[in-house]
Amino acid sequence: MSNDAAYVIINTFALVILIMIYSNMSSLQEKLLFRQRLFMYMLKILGLQIILDTVIWILDGVPGAVVRYTNITITVIYVICGPVIFFLFSLYITAQTREKNQFAKSLVIILCIPIVVNAVIALMSIRGGYYFYYDQANVYHRGPLFLGMSITWIIYILYSVTFLICNRRKLEHRFLIPLFCAMIPPVLVGILQIAFYGLPLIWGSLAISMQIVFVAIQNGQLYLDYLTGLYNRRQFDSYLDERVKDRKKAMLMGGIMLDLDSFKDINDKFGHVTGDSALVDAAQILKTSFRKTDVICRYGGDEFVVIFYRSTRAEIDLAVKRLVENTNKFNEKEKRPYKINFSAGYDIYEYESGLSAQLFVKQIDAKMYENKKRAKS
Image (cartoon, rainbow, N blue to C red; front, side, top):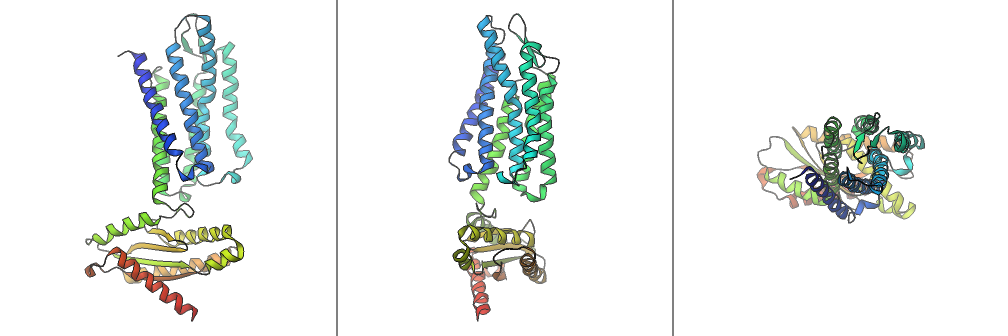
């Protein structure tokens, strides 16, 4: 097989992957979120780059004035768009902890500088050959400033890595690790392609990166509650079913069922948007009260459930006490038009009882309603 054929096949394979991801992304519930729109833009730009790269490769060395001008035009567009993918990825990384309206204009302007500089040099290369030039035989050659394009990409990758490290505590590991992993293929292949021109792997590696990020997004859709970021009912049921069958666990398994008090009153008095904010606040309190290894789930509506392991009953009681303390601290510190309070029922799962997962949930749910009723009396 010729190098040309191999190059086209690899790029075609990468393009097919992108089309499949884009098709699936179009049906996801989160596609209207700012960060998911950024991801869709990345897919489009990357698809365009693959097409341009393939055309450049096919036309390289083909004689004729028309081909020459076509090559130069396409190459300029190709060079300008190259770092845009990494710019969008930088914004996508930032959007994992910030919404669109929380983006500082100064940050966006600073991140745009490398793109603008790269675009200017790309346009100047038409006559000056700084990034690239075509000889009399219409064969592409790297210019003296060729590494400048790579430096532009590196700037965005360094920003993304730094941002992830600095904000690692704000991101769940199931998102943090895939985002880090997504940067590995283009970095490794980029180094190889700088050293060995013609290595047809850079866009395929980026397609793999998009696949890594997409799997993380899809898993989030399947297993996470859209509003609170906690596990959803589906993931909880699956997890608990497995845990009750695991009789080799040396530690005690505790379960807590929680109900957000006066949630209907919050909705009726302040509206559903404020009600959603109350649910998000409740979820945040739960996250700060329990360990990262504990499973916290939005069970439905204003109900939450937590499954966790501790060595003794005293440690389980302490975990519940910490939740009460953190709830009180939140109400004292945060100026909300509402107060967050939970009614809770908890118990230890007895493996010897042979109790099913559903009956254990029913057990702690009944305890929660008993405590809720007792508090009102």
